[in-house]
Image (tube, rainbow, N blue to C red; front, top):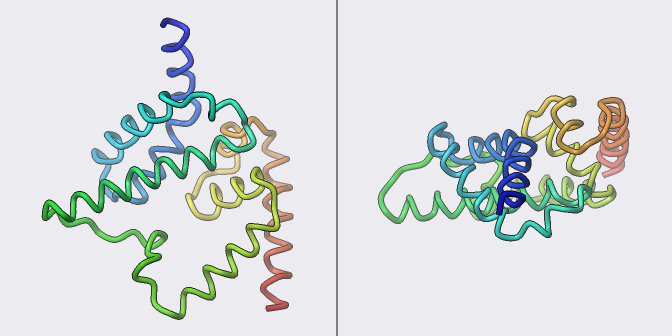
Length: 162
């Protein structure tokens, strides 16, 4: 059991800041984001085998955190709590003008490996510093910068052609 706790603590130190930022971005409340971060890690620790592949771990953690927070928001609205809607998660109520943009973004992201996708989303969407992304992914800051530059170049090229 001690080994399990040690691994859980290491996971929390490594991924906690990214999960907290994701929760805060969705919930817009620091205390709710702290609570959600802890709850997300309880879920993550239950299925630690998915946390072993560094290439796919951050996208999976983001998905768990996002789903958890969106469920909290939905459950809160059912109880009459009022949350401000986060701009990035408005899929159901998006107006028709944003759908082509979302499809374009998905198309561009799909052209890259999971690590580059994680770098792009971490820096451009979640506002992480390149150094933070590098630490979380176990990459050098220079590698993160190269992946981000390559992503931006291809994205610009793809948008210009569209």
